Length: 358
Image (cartoon, rainbow, N blue to C red):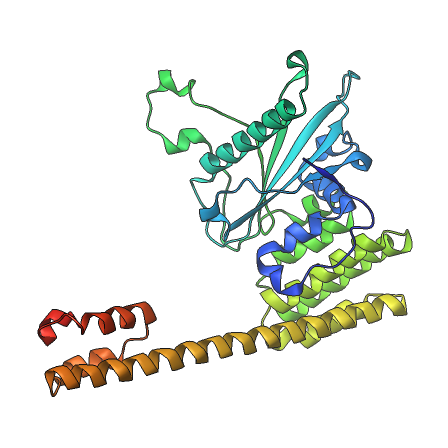
């Protein structure tokens, strides 16, 4: 079942999940859903009723691909141009945040679309909707690609098959919107006038010099000021969080102070400026803690593997006497703990060094 997106959904997400879920977190604001549709599907965007938008709090991405993809699915009414009765529509955002294009995405996206329809069908069954009233809602599939490498388009299922022309018409097909943020011309990003376009422009300048990127940060923050002054504080917070996260996670660390200063300069109201300062400090603390935790984990793993190597060598010498130098070298180079555990178990049954398989 869906949950209604309320204006009170304003809690900021943790900064450490920015690399995988930055755009996802932006879309948790209803205003950003509206703004993004105005950029990627301008012919349709004004016909949705965003006040009645609800979110489906589940994923349809298969587990094997969740490290490179996330999805965000919303349900909202759509008013047809011909003036006929409104339709309930799913808007399915598939967020591709890895750097490599994937030719198999059209197939996986089709599977996700079918899973969504199957969930809708089951929901209608469980709610005992009369059979005559059961139907599948249309789906608007949108792929948002934020990687650095060029990706010309989603492609189709036909690209993945080898069929004679007379059989091509029997393949499933679906239309979709493919949006590669780093490749979209600036005019297309900003044509709607929504501040989100200036925010997404950061992807186009991902590898630009620091001074050029700092100017883009200032321009984005200046455009965002209009949101705060008209009361869209929750949306402004999420977008400011995105700017800080982008600087911390996608730009060189030595540029961070300069870029964060550019972000603060563009904020007019002192309380909001302090908010940006707090976000920047929090993000620095988070990165430090993550590095510290990773260091601790690596240190613990290294200590464990070292202890197992020493035990393994001691037991082998006790059972087989002096070891060939090349065997000692190979064991000293081992860091894989399951492999060391396996060798420690083999000592019990091995009749020779050769049988150890080192």
